[in-house]
Image 1 (tube, rainbow, N blue to C red):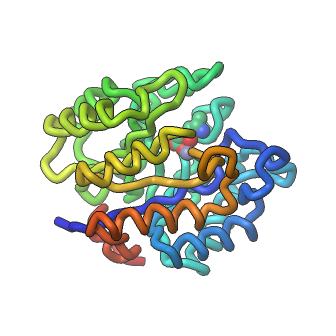
Image 2 (cartoon, protein in one colour):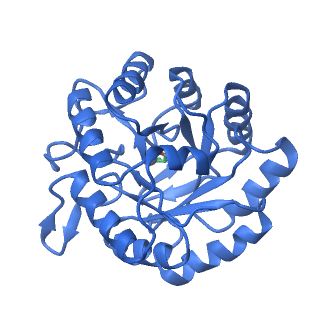
Length: 278
Ligand code: KMH
Ligand code: ZN
C-alpha cells in the first residue's frame, strides 16, 4: 500500500487541433520535451496519443514504436499507449498499438456517446484487447466513462482473469458529454462500486474541461490517484489557456503534497501497478 499519489499526464489526446491549441505537443520532439518537463514536476505515467506529420491523430505503427523508444530513452516514465485512439480509428489499428511494446495500454470498458460522436468499444473487442495484453505482459489501465462499465470490468475479470502483473487499476474519465458527470457524488459512487472488484484495486480520475479541479480534489480526498493534461483540459482557469502540460502536472503535484500524499516516483508507480522495472 502506498500513501503517495500516482500522477498520469495525458498531454495530447485526439480531439484538440494544434491550430486551436498551439501549446499542444504533436511532434515527437514536442512530446519528449513535454514528457521530461512533466516527469521533473511529478508525473510517473504518460498516456500517449500521437499525431502524424499534419498534426492529425494517428496510430501509425512505426511512429508508435519510435515514440515508445524515444520516451524510454529520455525519461523513466511508464509509457501507456492509448488503444482508444480517435473515435474514427478501426479496431484492427487499435489492437495493433500493442505491437509497439508499451509498458501499459488503455482499455475502455464500454461504448459511450462522445460529444456528437460514438466511442465504440464492443464486448468482443474488449475481450480481445484484454487477453492480448495478458499474453504480452502489457498492463492495462481500464478506462471507465460511466458507472455500469465497472460491472463490465467485473465480468471481464471473472471470465478472463486478472491482467498482466495481477494488479487492477482503473481510471475514471468524467464529464465527457455522453458519460458520467464530473461531480464528487459520481466519483464517490464509482469508488463505492470498486468494492465488487479485486481487493487492492486502485483508481485515478480525471475531469474533462471545467470538471478538472472538482474531480482532482475529490479523488485526492477519496484516496485516489490523478490524471491531468491537455487531452482533458486546455483551460487552466477561467479565461486562461493552459500554457503547458507541466503547468497542470505541477498544480496536481502541489495539491497532492498539500494533501500529504506526495507524487510517486516512476519506480514507486511501477511497484503499485505491477509493472516490472525496465
Ligand atoms: N480519444 C477518445 C475517443 C483512450 O485513450 O483510451 C478515446 C480516448 C481513450 O482517449
Ligand atoms: Zn486517451
